[in-house]
Length: 289
Image (cartoon, rainbow, N blue to C red; front, top):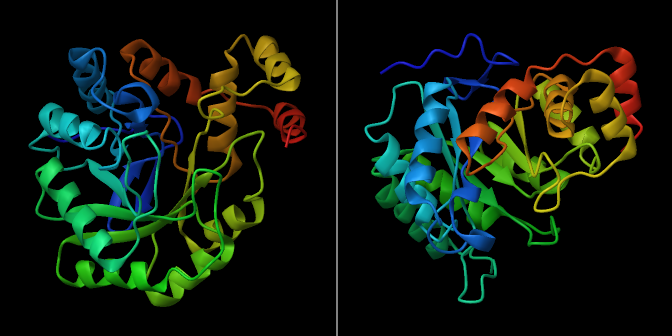
């Protein structure tokens, strides 16, 4: 099965040796409340994944920590054997505890274990793209990432990982990772109201490295802005559509992974990302950050 993404908003981006749709899908919301346990509607979760492929999305983001293991196993059930054009990106560097917390797990043994867990859950011999998840739930935390990232490089050399990225990283950590091995993607929190990575995003664009904003719509609490609502009303669109369109127009290296557990909402996200913003619209939205 070959996916056609020629009609998707934003076109495509070359991620390592793969060409992916700039509009993708983030699987985190397929797990239960607070990303723990199974979904309330298991058949609905499988339907969302299959619909993402039918719509032409060729970039799915996941992690063994989601559930934990829940989203990866749903992806395998819904989509394996995977379409040739589909890139499944995952993350290592953190675990889940019984209280739903996200404790870091970045010792070399942790990284090796988590890569194997992702391989097993997804039913793969090699992972397309692995991001090293850094920092904590509050955001990036400064410090060397060499030991964990070098472990990923070893696994890449063994053929278990194809491409490498970092997530929730400081600019210094991105530079450190790039000094160790090629990085194809950086996945950080970024949206209309959270713009601290502006300079990093631009520098990555110049280097041909993808920037994948997580929480593109504001996270568990959706973006609230009078300016955003005003632009949306003027265009006859939803605020979510405007926020996604702004991200796509922000820079050609931005890849979107909005998540949802609803087929209808998935279709709305894809259609909304195609909204064309005028320079005046963009200027008004830029002032939010």
